[in-house]
Amino acid sequence: MNIHEYQARDLFEKFGVAAPRGKMASTPEEAEIAARELGIEKLVVKAQIHAGGRGKGTFKNGYQGGVHAASTPAEVKEIAAKMLGQTLVTHQTGPAGRVVRKVYIAEAAGIEKELYLAILLDRAKSAPVIIASTEGGMDIEAVAAKTPERIFREPIHPLLGIQPYQARKLAHALGLKGQQFSQATKLIQAMYRLFVAEDCSLVEVNPLVVTKEGNVLALDAKFNFDDNALYRHAEVVALRDETEEDAREVEASKYGLNYIGLDGNIACLVNGAGLAMATMDNIKYFGGEPANFLDVGGSATKEAVAAAFKIILSDKQVEGILVNIFGGIMRCDIIAEGIIAAVQETKLPVPLVVRLEGSNVEIGKKLILESNLPVISADSLADGAQKIVAAVKEGKAA
Ligand code: ADP
Ligand code: MG
Image (cartoon, rainbow, N blue to C red; front, side, top):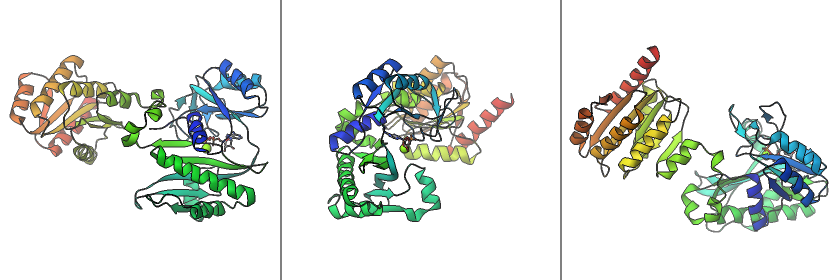
């Protein structure tokens, strides 16, 4: 799960990570009031979307940049009016872009130097790792590709936590001295406490800046939370912005379905993550492109299967469906009932291939056969994948 920058700012404050003051607004009028309440002369107006690269982004209405400086409340209002309700395209949003529904009005920092700081999980080391670089404000992937020696990595022992010497090592790697050195070590340790306490999988500050006054501040913030730990962070869940998430994924999560939207045209409905991966591999192997990953789980109900079908069909890119079920705890007849109910309700605008195996497979197959619905039956995973790829090709040719 992700959050917005203005929400991240609140978490920074709670844990003592220094960052500029600011206020969120969702209308130009609110933005003007926020600017007045902040009572600061030098401000920035920042588009709030769950994607980076805003500074260099472009709005579809032609307005350049999702981060703008302003010096009066009237100017803040004017900029907010140009951003709100508009679609911002950045290198992270893809060509579709994201609609800006909120802006963040923040104190403008006089920037002397832009640095990079992030904490994430290093799965190979089975530990959190802090990444620091003097090359802040730009695409860190590009820095890693061109000048990897400018990226400093410090793994943290998961049980011992961050040691003061490690924070000093990082501050040193950032080239900081004196007051900035001690501010940075404090900020790094506070950020690590936040990372652990809130079960983050990523906290990225790009840029971390040294101001003209000589202070060290986190100017931007990107957070990822571990979804498996959200149950113990109700206050984080409350920050969720569903308008920023894939509508299909939000709907699927209501039924306990594991759904991830992809770019292809063959939808899959499978039970078990491993089987879902194998199904996608097979579709690709036989020349198709999966439209989604969908694991209905081991104990899905007839209703969940029907809901899964509707989510799949709400995706306009879908030109065919492959159902691949291995009945274990989940019985094939239950799946068959769900499929029949969904097909009858949706009138099935695209070809459907069903492969059932395992518990009650005979009953399941019989139910589908007797329903007289236009379902193509398959006997193995490879057979199913070939049949759906062929059916989609035929559909296109027709
Ligand atoms: P993104 O990463 O989405 O482009 P950032 O928050 O990093 O958004 O902002 C882009 C750039 O805008 C920063 O690198 C910085 O130069 C400038 N900027 C952002 N926030 C402030 C601020 N509070 N004061 C001054 N400059 C800022
Ligand atoms: Mg940034």
